[in-house]
Amino acid sequence: MTSRISGFYHLTPLERLDKISETVDLSDEEKTTLLDKGLSVQQADQMIENVIGTFPIPLGIAVNFKVNGEDVFIPMATEEASVVAAASNAAKLTYQTGGFTTSTTGSIMRGQIQIINVKNPYHTLAKIYEKKEDIIQLCNEQDQTLVALGGGAKDIEVFVLEKNKMVVVHVLVDTRDAMGANAVNTMLEAVAPLIEEISKAEVVLRILSNLADKRIVRARATFENLFNNKKDEVERFLSAYKLAMIDPYRAATHNKGIMNGISAVALATGNDTRAIEAGAHAYAASSGVYRSLSHWELGDDGHIIGTIELPLVVGIVGGATQTHPVAKLALKLMKIKSAEQLAGIIAATGLAQNFAALRALATDGIQKGHMKLHARNMALMAGAKMEQVDKVIQQAAEKETFNFDTMKEIVESQQN
Ligand SMILES: CC(C)(COP(=O)([O-])OP(=O)([O-])OC[C@H]1O[C@@H](n2cnc3c(N)ncnc32)[C@H](O)[C@@H]1OP(=O)([O-])[O-])[C@@H](O)C(=O)NCCC(=O)NCCSC(=O)C[C@@](C)(O)CC(=O)[O-]
Ligand SMILES: NC(=O)C1=CN([C@@H]2O[C@H](COP(=O)(O)OP(=O)(O)OC[C@H]3O[C@@H](n4cnc5c(N)ncnc54)[C@H](OP(=O)(O)O)[C@@H]3O)[C@@H](O)[C@H]2O)C=CC1
Image 1 (cartoon, rainbow, N blue to C red):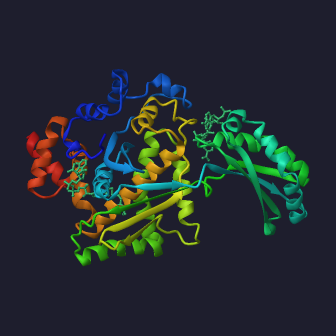
Image 2 (cartoon, rainbow, N blue to C red):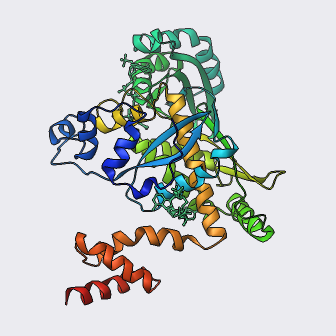
């Protein structure tokens, strides 16, 4: 199987699906699910409240990815043009240098229990640690499945916030292949009365933390030096990264570019994109200054070496991962066997996304590539009918501009 398919984007959606089906066995029913709207109103009505319909967004496939030695087609759900093209374009430049290599620190989530108006916080801290085993045992009584899978509550950490007379207990829970929020929150609510008994004070918050700093994923890759060793372009690329390390205004956009890739795969697999984004941005600020989640260095051979590290809390069970039919298919397309494997692929996609953006910004600028692909949206926005779009774009290309005003002029001239 190879994910390196040149010109994949010239195929029709059905031809792309057939191509992928050559290596991932998809039934006709599964193909229909993907090509139809993917989620029925009846299914949606089982997932959230007050359902009146569904909100389908495009599902693309990033090609050219090799992650930990395995070729993989990566499903990306996004409304933004050029994101899938960018990820594929960047991955292409790593295909011959070994692709992406990833690692994870495990699947430990932090659950927080906040205790207020604590008279003697340090005395309370000591008493809580003395009862650690009771706390852990009571947590694990809430989720036999998780414990049977080798997961469950493993440890606690206690913090004194002296100024506010608060003590915060962190329960460290291994949630295995689940994102784990529901599992952790259930444990915290069950153990809160015991914490109040030990501390002789009032518990308020019992909720997991999205700053999952014990569930860090790292990815690295070497990108062929497409600048043909043009020194100035390599320097421009690296200067764009360095700005994102020292300037929060730039770092916010730099990391948004990374999340274009990360959130698209997270959404496609039914994961909680808000939880992932909250954790990523909190981690980006954890040094005290909000900065880039990725790092870029010049390799000996002139290639550019990229690395990324961030908390990436994803599940392959729980949440919508198994209830949304397309999410299940997205996991099948990537042949996912564990949450850690999925997290690695997602981190690799974010790194690729970042390379493509920095490369465009350091050379032609983002608009040249982005607007060429965004043109279809602009033509439709300017009032073009579906059958008109290709002709409108052709005329816009002749004028070498894809802005709304030009599109509107072209559409109106064609319709008169
Ligand atoms: C857009 C490209 C890829 C064109 O780049 P190009 O060099 O014109 O592409 P190419 O024709 O040489 O093709 C190279 C490969 O790109 C892919 N590719 C090429 N065209 C397509 C297409 N139509 N559909 C799908 N895939 C496509 C495809 O894999 C292709 O390989 P091939 O199939 O030829 O062997 C390039 O200009 C690019 O990567 N630009 C960056 C775009 C980007 O980053 N978009 C994200 C949105 S902008 C944003 O929100 C993030 C940002 C910018 O703010 C972040 C930041 O500030 O850091
Ligand atoms: N701040 C946040 O991020 C919050 C997020 N959420 C939401 O919580 C949901 C995710 O919570 P989560 O607990 O994962 O969801 P679920 O409770 O749906 O699924 C987790 C449960 O699945 C069972 N399970 C079966 N197989 C496995 C396995 N291999 N590994 C791990 N668990 C397994 C476990 O035990 P058992 O069967 O005993 O349950 C586990 O408790 C998401 O929808 C998210 O949006 C909710 C609140 C806050």
